[in-house]
Image (cartoon, rainbow, N blue to C red; front, side):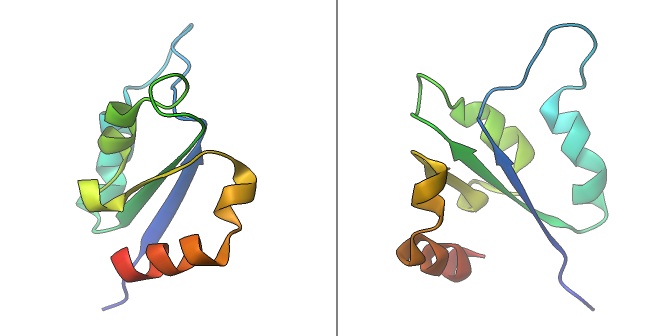
Length: 86
């Protein structure tokens, strides 16, 4: 069986103007199919990134990551952290 992983990189705050699907429901179908979802929030925690929304997306709290900027995501040390956890 192949392991399937989806990486979701987000600014950490769902836009809720107009019609939208709650994040937990939007990610539910992939989770039911066995896809492991990794949620990566980019921005400052609390002021930009909503950690609870990342938890709604991710398969587990171990699959939630935070980065202050997109440059930080390119840091090789962060790539090692992703590999170890996932």
